[in-house]
Every structure is written in C-alpha cells, then in structure tokens.
Image (cartoon, rainbow, N blue to C red):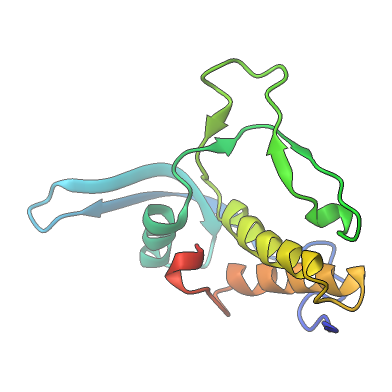
Length: 153
C-alpha cells in the first residue's frame, strides 16, 4: 500500500504547530460524587473539556505503562516502529510502571500498533509508507480529524 503524506509532508513531527497543555479531568455522578479525577492530563490546547475528560477516563492506560523502555529490533520494520519492552535497569522496584498522562502517548500507542501490524503483514510498499501512515494517523487523531472505535483505544 502506498501512503501519501497529506498533512505531514515537510513537518518534523505530526504534533508540529500544536501546543499541549496540562488540564484537570474530573467526572462526577449526578449526586456530586467523583467518579474519576486526574491532574496534569496533557492534551492539545484547543480540545474541549469534554474531549479531555473522555480521553483521560476512558482511553488512557491506567497502569502497566513502563517508565523506561528498550526497542526490539525487527527485520522489515522501520526503527521508529520497533516494538518496545520494559527496561527495568536502574529503575526502582515499584516505580517501573505507571499510567498514561499525555494524549501523545495514546496517539503514538495506537498509530504505532497499527503501523507495526501493517509492516508485519507486508501491507506497505516501502518503509516510508509505513512511517507516513504512522505520522498521518497521529496528526489526525491529535486534531480530532479521526478517532478509532472504542475497543481500539
């Protein structure tokens, strides 16, 4: 599959031009009790509070996110898309894993997974097509041009 860069041609990053800001996310029941809360949730500045709350509550990984990773080299997969494994060297027990706190982590995780699968299945004509797919998806998700179905998040 050929992938033409429509949004990211010439950009150093799919997040170029966006400002990510920390927000508080809080969701309450009708009785006022707090269902979910998180401080310092990093999202694009133009996002609504509702979009911030939905991403933080429903789609951020709440646990099991390694604070340090090491890439696993794979033939036929561009370096930028190599899968990662936890790297626990030098990280104190009990501090090795956390949660997602930044929308870019979610976008990178999803687009990276799909692009990686595409590489593994031979779906892209070239490694550059795989990277274009990865960047274009991250660009579009960050700007709310597209979103996956809930089970993907």
